[in-house]
Length: 565
Ligand code: FAD
Image 1 (cartoon, rainbow, N blue to C red):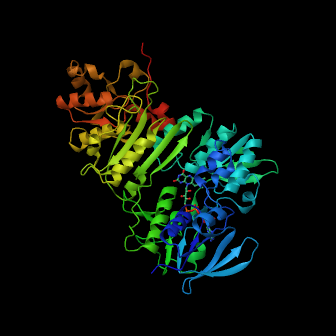
Image 2: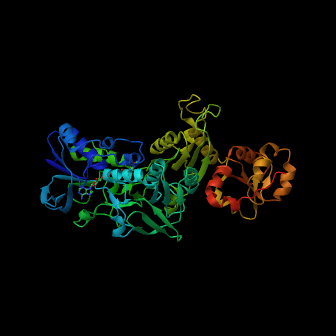
C-alpha cells in the first residue's frame, strides 16, 4: 500500500530526485522534504565554476526553490530545518528550525539522503576563520568567490576531484595557488601514471602542487592564513579551501538504531531499504556495491545518487515493478586546465586489495584522424582479466575526447562486454570526430592480442627492476634513445631488427627481451619480429610515455641521456 506521508531528509541530489519521482507516481501522497541548509535542489557540482567565474549568476545554481517545488510538484519543502532525533518505532522525527524551535513529525515512509559532512582535520579555531571554507554549499561558493576576487593567493588542502576543481577556479581568477595532497599523487583514484600527466599540465599552468605533504597547522593572523606544512615550510594565503573528504552524515540516525558500517555509511538492501521498517537511504551516506570487485563502498557521485533516488521512489510507490539498485562502476570525470581526466571501474589499489588478477594496457592514440587539424592524444589505460577479457577498470587523460571514450568503456562494462569485443563497435567516423580505428577499437585490438596469447606486456614498475636474465630492447631511433633510455638497454630501431639480428643475439647474450618504444606502436612491431626470431619477450605497456609519467619527478634520475655525437 502506498504511504500517506513520505518524509525525505536532505533536499539535494538523492532526496530531491526521490521527491520529484514520488509525486509523478502518486498524486495523493503527502511529500515533505526537510533540509537543514538554506537552499534545496542546488547544483553542488557547479559550485567550483561559480567560484572561478565561468558561471556568472549564482541563481543559475539553484535548480528549484521551495516555492517552485510546491507549485510544480506539490512538495512541502522546509529549509533551515534539521532532523535532530528519530524514534524508528513510533516513526517520529524530531526536527529543529534555524531559530532553535523544536517540533515532531511522523512518517509512513522515510528516505534519508543526508550526504556527507567534511572530515575534521583542523582545530575548531582555524575552521572559524572567515578565510577558511569547505566547498559544499552555495554559501561556501559565494564566500569563496568574494575572497578570490579580493585575494592574491590561495591554498587548497586536498588534491581530490573537488580540491582540483577549486584550485583551478583560483588559477582562473589569477591567484597564486598551492594544493596540498597527502598521497603520492593528486586525484588519488587515478593511477599514478595518469595523475602525473594532469600534475605536469597543472604545474605548467602555474599551480603549485605539494604531494606526500600534509597541512600540520593553520592559523589566521587577522589578515591572512598561515599554513604550516609537514615539510617544515609555511604558506601564507588570502583564502584556504578544505577539501579533505567527507564522512556520512548519519550520526543522528545511527544513534537511534539505523544500521551503519564502522565509518557510519548506511547498510541497505538492493532496493535501498535499511534495517528500520519503512526507512530507505540513498546517496553519499550509503554503501553501494561496486560492480568491478563486488565489494561495498561509498560512491560519492551525483549520478548514482540521482538515479537511486528515483529507484527508491519506485520501490515505495510501485514495488511490484521497481528495479533493484544496480552495482556501480563509479564513473567520474574532472576538468584540470585544458586536460580532462576520466575513470570508470576499479583501480590497481582496489583490485590488489581484493586479490583480483589483471593485466594492464596503455595506449596513446589521437582523439581523431592524425592528419585533421587539432589532433591530440587520448592517453588510455585499461585493466582487464586476461582469462575472460572482462574489463575491470579504465582511465583516460587528454585534451579532447576523453569523456566519449570513458563513457563507451563504462557502457561496455555495464553490458559485460569483454575487451576484445571493443574491436567490433561500429563508431560514427569522419576525420574531425574520430579515426577509422577509433581509440576504443584499438583498446579492443591490444586486449585481443593479449587474450589470444600474441602479446605479453610488462608494466613500468617491472621494467625498471628487471631480473638479471632480462634486458631492455629499445626500438626507437638513435636520437630518441639518446634523449633518455633505461640503463643497459640495447638500441636497435624496429626497422633494423631483421638485418641486425646477429648483433641483437650477441648483445642479448641469452637474455629475454623487454621491448619498448615511445608509445607502444613500434615496440609491437619489434616484439613480433623478435618473437619470430625465437626470443622470450614482453612489451612495455604504453612505452616511454607511460614510463616517464609513472616515474614522475624521478625520471631524470632513472633515465640515462647521452649526446648523439
Ligand atoms: P547531498 O547532495 O550532499 O545532500 C544532502 C543534504 O542533506 C544536504 O544539503 C544537507 O544539508 C542535508 N542534511 C544532512 N543532514 C540533515 C539533517 N539531519 N536534517 C536535514 N537535512 C540534512 N559528483 C559528480 O558526480 N560529479 C561532479 O562533478 C561533482 N562535483 C561536485 C562538486 C562539489 C563542490 C561537491 C560538494 C560535490 C560534487 N559532486 C559531484 C558530488 C555530488 O554532489 C554528491 O555525490 C551528491 O550531491 C550526493 O547526493 P546526496 O543526496 O547523497 O547528498
